[in-house]
Amino acid sequence: MFRYRNRLALTILRVKLPPLALYLLLSIPLIIFEEQIDCMPAWCGMVAIPPTLPFLLIEMLALGAIVLWRHAKNVSRITFYFSIFGVFWEILLGGLVGAPSTIIAIFAPYVGVSYAFISILPLTVLVEGKATLGDEKVVLPALPPPPL
Image 1 (cartoon, rainbow, N blue to C red):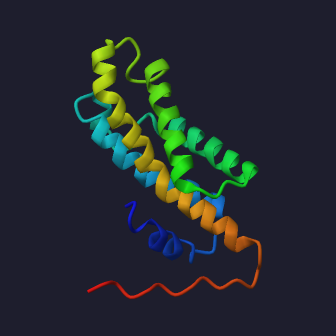
Image 2: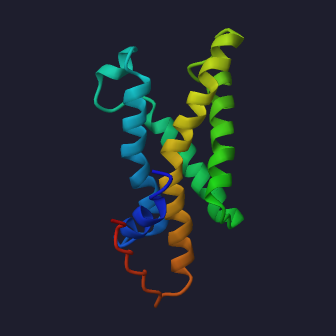
């Protein structure tokens, strides 16, 4: 996803919705997909919509508001900081509460990658959409042909 995120973002931005709405709508299937992987061994893996969806959507909404407020432009840096936040969130309030430090050391990189997965494409859509909203007459560039 990291490699093709700009192409995907330009394609998604062709939908005529505000960038923040696209950001949140795009986050939902990514969160559901990731939580289905995370919750496989637990009871929450048995339901179609994970019970953590509202909490993660609130986190994503707060992240989107911060990005818009701070006029952030570097998606990789934002994703990196959000992944670090996610690791601390899981250690203090989430699934790693009370886990031994060896388990935390094993799972922390995986948790960070999970938070990066659910945030990198929506953040790219938000930042690119914010950039194209500044001028009403901006036309999104055509997608380049795929490499052979």
